[in-house]
Length: 366
Image (cartoon, rainbow, N blue to C red; front, top):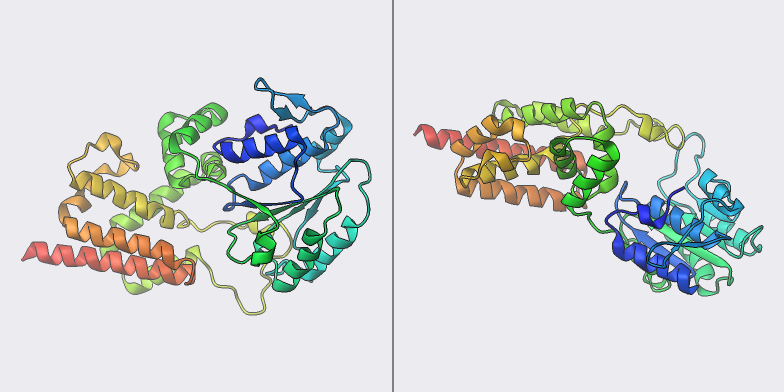
């Protein structure tokens, strides 16, 4: 069974939740805010198990930990604790809706009116909570304003901008932090038994997201996908606009009209990823190395160390001003992802990088 001590890189959240269990000052509502794979579900599950545990234990610092052996803990570990309830988007006609509808929240609200079956509290873990429409949030608000004393609601969300202010004001919001790179490296080496070099590479691609770092470390295709992305960047000056469009559309395929967006819950994770899918993550790492080499840095400090010759060639061919413009475009691309379709944003970035490199080649020949 998982424990608070298994939480890595989220010390503030861990301490807050452990203190709530220890003192009994458990809020009726929390928002766990963080990107996919950041550990939100993991933390919510540990907290829920600890709240329901009937034989709570103490760690070496006197802070509470779920015992792992009482009936409640055994059920929680198996996903069958009757008073830990998951609220999620349910497939309708073979599709998963884009929003978490008011119907799901009303069902939760009606269930919350019924006292716990076996525990002192009833805990609702609401997945994809940022996808609640306005009706759903207003329905939730009625429970948040007058919650039964035994109810705890944990909203798992990727961002809080879509929440109504009235919902936000009635929840304790806990923001997932980026895990320090060295912490991820140590974790991967210890828990996944990989070399420091590979752990460092996985951590660099994960950009502070430990769950993503673990997925990358466990992915047998990672090296091939990474090399494919590096090959694209090394040869981008030779690419036509059509080549760039095809690559971007391969990474972010457009939905076909009338096609099922998802056959059922979980199917999305089973889809085969594009061979190019690491390209967006590779671009900033590639140009970080180019910048380092341009400044005379050692190849020992490179992230993509096996590409030293190619990134070194790029550093020789482009000016500092050119690198600066590319880095600005990368930052702009990351901002545009919030307002522009990902394939369009990536197409624009790749075209700008290609044109900047072509201009550098042309200027060098003069």
